[in-house]
Image (tube, rainbow, N blue to C red; front, side, top):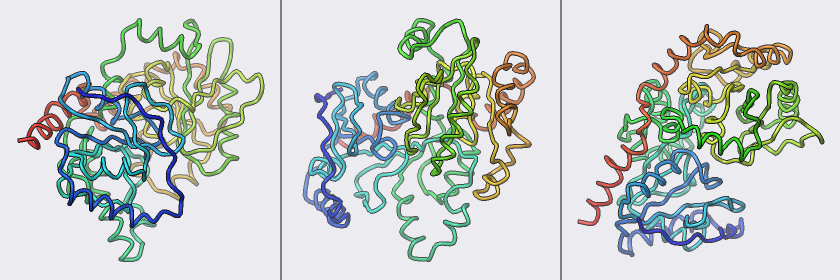
Length: 392
């Protein structure tokens, strides 16, 4: 695979730059320039990270030695990209050229809404998790938008040409919620391949050393979903702090869009929110503590204990809505107080066995297509033929 040396991401142009002008520039490039039949543009979390399913697909593209040229779309501040990975800054001239001449875009959330996809480009959407919370047109707030706003939003989803799916539940929620007409690739979620296959003992040991973990105590990963309330973030950090004991070590991974939590000096909790790829943390965790995050569906693939911490359960579920009642169908016990959480997370070995059948139900329902070969199949069955076909 042809790769250029990485570039330092350039800042976005001034915020006064008109998105419509940039969109028109991409259109002009697509109309007036020859297509690069080997070019794939990757983006993760709206250009914030080198992570998730786009990362897994990119690395598989390299592993299979596909004749392709890859660039990553990044936004200001996204600097943690490996050497050898070529990046182009959002809104830059290089970004406009790449989007307008590429054969494929690979994403897990969404390129800017105002960006029109050239007809000749194939857009592969990998999405960033199985939903518990209602999404898209299933959300009454979104469904209640004015007609013009609904039309603009639907145009965003209509850009997708294909979407990866881990289960029929995903198809019935995400795909249907966005009224997507994309081809559904029932191959699993590329980012979850590592959770299904697992890592070698040596690799796990190396990862644990890099995080400064003790091999002789239980590792608890505390990974809540997003919140716009700093007080909630502080409360979550405080709850995580109660889990650290001589027999446990705690990693705290805040949502990428949340403001950083100011850790107390001397805290026994390690803040790993700066690590972009959740899979790198899930593979070393012995126990997951989350709330409503899609990480519960991912971690169930490892068949390790999961605790749900939901002190705001009634308000959260009542306000946003969910596709099913998590209180009736959970992958592990639910704690609604910090004391309950401390007791459950610290005694996972005592109750783990009784929850194994429920985790199996989760894998069957939410991960039925997860075989550990999603990235391999996406590259071999979708991207490689697409690139080969485009050049003929």
